[in-house]
Length: 353
Image: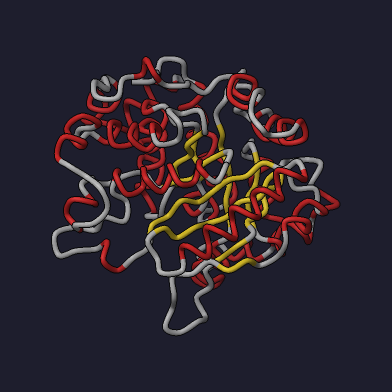
């Protein structure tokens, strides 16, 4: 398969818009690019102990993207986050946790991220076959009215005992509970590092005020970029973030610190430039940014996933963490989608902008 031609075909009349763009605000000259040597160049002189480096190496050196510095992770915690019936009705096979792990293995993902229950049930069978990432906190939907809160569902040591190489967690930046979440997860990440595990932070924003009559700024580049910056401050080794959909969140909502020159200096309205701002907030790419795949929308999923991968890679990001677009399809179709996205990162003709 000619990957570049396949990407061009899926991007259609937007191909040159995405594939030929050059970032002129935050240029690539100051970026750290993902590479086979990223762990050495970023973490070898850090405070991460040798066990953490080994865990990161396990994650980066497994699957179809092994040794590239890029990541393809299958995340399935939606059974808690979005309700199991709603998440799995399109493909009830995934009520069975083993099928989640099998999908990640067969698709050649770097790792599988899921709940204590999912990964714990099959830890002895699979923890040595694919890197486990245990998501340690969740927002469940049975509380009514629903609150934007992430609660710990287990301990870091539980994750370590089942052989996980990393723990993942979410902080809802902007929510009234965010300070408590931030303290909890900073402490959890410190314990994970002490035990030799890597850390991945889902840096999401949640506040009703972030959605105005003009636009929804939950995925604004400036707000998500600042969430990323706080995430790397508490020593996340990898940042998960939604792809930015707009900008000017601080300005339009009217809070935080901002001025017009900040926006003019750092970015444009091009999607790759907006994502580049997210990457810059991850210590200029030294902490890897993986963008999420978003909702499954049926026939457009493959095109959307390829577009997200191109934006992330060309912005200087480190890969995708893509779940619903894959597991809400028949098994073989899920594998095909994940592997097609991986090809974007393996294609040398698709470069950092």
